[in-house]
Length: 129
Image (cartoon, rainbow, N blue to C red):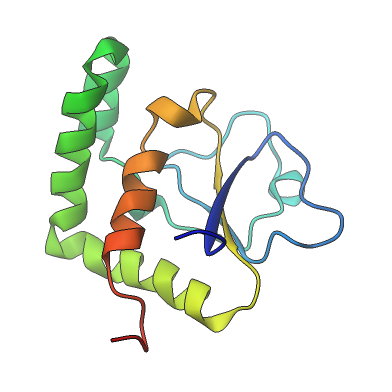
């Protein structure tokens, strides 16, 4: 979903030109050493992040990325995650600027974000056919 969602690290400054659109923290834990003011997030959707159990399992051995991504996809398919995925899609549909998914992870490419972005691209946006 090009230009609908983008990812930024919470440790980077918010876009001064306000091109970020709504900023949503998508990590289960609040980032260390970051105040709410500095984070400049509009909302925190911690329930869209991988479960604590899955996160802990993956961090013990990060070479298991493909298995992690598959397990996270299963979590996202769970009906309990549907409302938060729909909330992200509603934010995207409501605005003219992209929704910025904010995270504290260092290695975004091998985190939950690529899987989440793919899921957001597969789920029909509200108001579309």
